[in-house]
Length: 278
Image 1 (cartoon, rainbow, N blue to C red):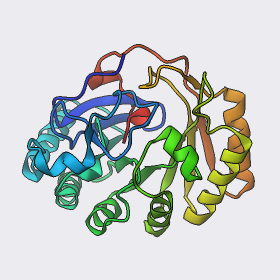
Image 2: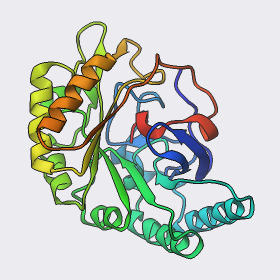
Image 3: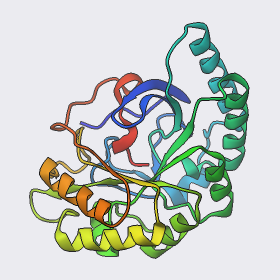
C-alpha cells in the first residue's frame, strides 16, 4: 500500500537512514503527485499526473508561502531546542518541477541564513530537470544535492524509472552541476522484467558515474512497499559488491540496505525520502 500524499509544505522531521533528522519541504501541490518519472519502486505509488500537465494545474505553493512555513517551523524548533540535522527539499514528486523553483530556493536559503546559518539545505531530485537553466541555478544555491541515477543505459532506465527524458541528457546535466551525491536504488523483479543489479547494468552505470564525477555515491534498496508489487530488494551482499566496484573506480560509496518493505505509516514522521519518486 503506497504512502499517503502530503498535505503541507513542511513535514517531519523525517528519521532518514542517510540524512539524520531531516525537516522535509514539499513543493508539490497538496495531495497531488507530479513527476517526470514513474519509478517501479516509488513509495507513493504510480505517477498519475505527468509533468507535461503541471502547467494546467493550480495549487503549487508560492515562494512566499514556502518562506513563511519554513520560517515558522525553524523558529519553533529553536524555541523548543529541537535537533534538526538538515532541511531537505523532497516531497511526493519531483520538487524541481515547481514553476518558480529558483525563487523558492532563494527564499529558503535566506530564511536559513537568518535563523539557522549552520543548517545544511539539501534536495532529493530525480535529476531529469538538472539541465534546465533556472533549475540548475536553484540547485547551485543548495548545500547538498542528492541526485538520482539508477541506471547507466536507456533500457534499464526505462524498466526502473520509466522516464521520458533522454538518458544522455540527464548524465550530461549532472556532470555540469556543482558536486553531487548520486543516489541509486537497486532492485530486482520476481518475474525478471526489472533488474539493475546485473553485471552488465552495473558496468554501464559505472561508466555514467565516470561522466558525472560525483563527490559520493549512496546505494540502497527497498525499505517500503513499492508501486510495482513484484519488486524485490537487492541482497545486501550484492549492494556491498557494487559499492566495492564504485570504490575501485575512485569514488566514495556508502550502502544503506533496507529491511523488508514495510507498510505505510505516518507520512509526516516516518517517511525516508530516499525511496520516493523524486
